[in-house]
Structures are given as structure tokens and as C-alpha cells.
Length: 310
View (cartoon, rainbow, N blue to C red):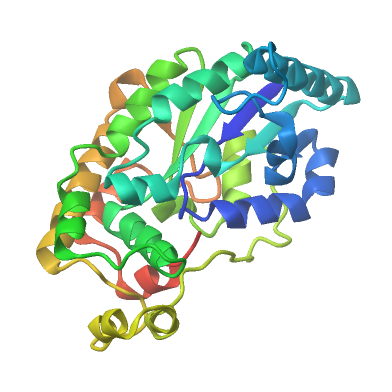
């Protein structure tokens, strides 16, 4: 059985994909594809995979987790499924930790190493969503600030911009942790808001179009975001409307250049560590499309349409 682990990242339309899969679970099952979403993965199945408080003393929580996963995989295989798609972005790490540390998924490698051990050789494929860094950090900040994360200062924004860790580092850490697993990268600019295309790319099946236009976990617009803030912070947004743009032009340019470098590395083969997922619904989306997109930027209407996807 092919076992594909989809780990987000956060703010890359992952919640939308999970709801699409939940709504289309029965149809996918008819095509031989089983789905585990957060309703399954966060119900105790993975308890013990990562270090934490022990509920039962003198037990090996990681070993117990391996046992639970092994039994559940065996049950799905016995049912006759050819493929299993597992989706949970929290496997990769914490968005709040990213915001606090000013960097991308600092412990991704160690986390994925532990999950690889938990699946005990059963994991065949891993799927990672990435996103242009200016839009990723903007979406993460918008989501965080609306939930109590401090309004970013200039120094905080510069930390995100000057971080030495990019998606390339995240990919390298994951590939090193899981050397025998196929690592696929789905850029948000291609797959964001297209959960059916994501499913087809992961499984090869003709994905249902039902519920494919669902959009969940959108970031609040400036007008709504202001209502969550203290008056002094809300005043800093007075000259903006629509999508919040916390980074200035120079900061944005640096973040986009870093992402362009990451994409060029991926297009060039990623040192054999990962591959860009094929977009089976748009065969024109080849390497040249990525190069054009990254050198000229995206139209504003597309930025605004996709900027809030979670």
C-alpha cells in the first residue's frame, strides 16, 4: 500500500485540502484511496511519537505509537485500499514557533525522523507545500496577530527577512531524516486553492471536482484585522485596506529573491533530494512557467485572491 504523508505547511491551503478530502472521503475510497485527516491523527494515534509527558510510567511511548500505527495500517490494507493519504500540518511543526523564532520549522528534521520511525518503513511518500516567503510570513503574521501574537515591529520583520533558513533548508532536513521516502514539493502558486489537483498529483486518481472550490482558514482583511488590535496598533493599518502588507518594498524584494532561489534549486533537481509535484491538470506548468512567474511576480488580483488561504 502506498502511504503518502502530507504535512502542509501552514498557511498553504492545507485546511482547505483537508476539508475537501473529508467531503470526498467516500468517493476517494471507491478509487482505492483511504484518508486520515486531523480527526484521525489528533485523536491519540500519534501520541508518543514526539517527546512529551508520559501517561503510563515505565512504558515506551514511541514503541506504543508504532504499535498503534502498525495496527491501523494493517486494518486499512485488509480493507483493500491501495493508497493511504495522511494530512496533518502540525507534524511539520508549529506556526507560532516559526513566528517566535523568526525562522521556518527549525526542528522539522528531528520531527520527521521520529515520524519515520513511527511508521516503521511503511511510509513511501511525503508531500510538502511551500509558498513565496513574503506571502507565507504575511499570512502567518495576519493569522497570528488576529489571535494575540504581538503586532510586528520593524526589528521583528527584519528577522523574518534576514533569516538564513529558507524552504531549501526545510526540504534538505526532511530528506536527510527520511532518505528512503519520496519527497514531493507542491508550490502554493500552482496548487493553492486547487485541492483536486493536489489529490490527483499525490495519488494519480481522477480526483472529484465536488467541493473543490471550498476555501477555509482565510486570513482576515485589514478592515477586520483592525478590530482585533489595540488602538495604537490598529492605527498603524490606517493607510492600508484589503490584504495587509507588513513588509516594505525592499523587504518584500529580498524575500521574493530567496524564494526564487529555492524554486530554481527545485527546478534544477534539488540535488536529488526532492521533486516538484506534477500538475496533471495543467501540463503547461513546466519549469519555464516557474521561471516566468518568479521573475515577473504575480498579478495583484491573484495575490489578493490567494493571500488568505490557510
